[in-house]
Length: 197
Length: 154
Image 1: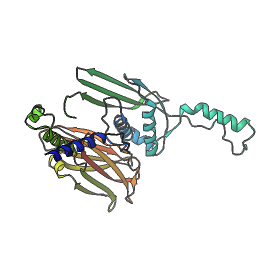
Image 2 (image 1 turned 135 degrees about the horizontal axis):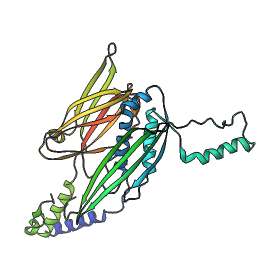
Image 3 (image 1 turned 120 degrees about the vertical axis):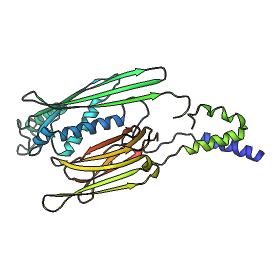
Image 4 (image 1 turned 30 degrees about the vertical axis):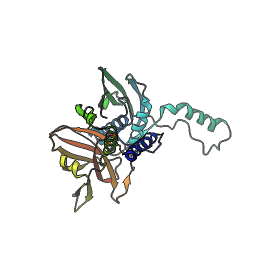
């Protein structure tokens, strides 16, 4: 009996002391449910839904059959209670749309950097004029992508319920018409339990 | 297991060694299979303007397949993008939490943008049927695969 006793105690100690910091690589695409806060799975779901919806919307399919229109991404207004990097969401949406080969983009966040480069190429005297980028040749955007991100949070004693709504619109700049719009809803709850996972 | 309200009182009859042994055994039982069900469908140019479709379902988790069944797989081209539609049914009376992921392949069999599609959680209520949709990342996709697994707190 003593042997069993020491074995059990020893084994328990080994298990307990085994709980040291353990770093491992994880699947970046796996469903993440650490907390109800905005997470990677929410971002990936929003991006997939929005891009799939945009690229399969019949009038957009028609427009992109023969040519690749130019668009730019305006900001996504974060109306949630959390600090969320909405630029990260629009970056992923833009990357997925570019990969589809259906649209081209101009980046309004890089206008100052581009102007500086033009100035350097034309005025510094360092750059060969024959290879310098010509001023006034950039393409104007035909469409603007913009949206809102809002949430409703409800809390009871041990339950937290979060509802997210992400809305995205595509406006035709010349006419001001919203050619496409869609929204993605996500609901997450967490419950504090005495037992179980 | 530990959700049962009587779980804490049951160990009152065990001595401390037995309780530790039982607790250790329970802590090891937590692991579940991560295997799932895979469905694939390819679209190839057949005779004339006809497109030929080939379907295949592989069950790697019989326990999951007892509850979830792929009842239909369809695909069409929207413009020149392959769109997949997979119909599932929950054969059980209870709600099942699953996750799915699409993979897309060129005609040559090369996977497009490996591992960029994320696992998406889905709730299937008792005896509910649901359609899962996916759109190929670019016009080169001619074949898709859907992977379905139980949603685990991994």
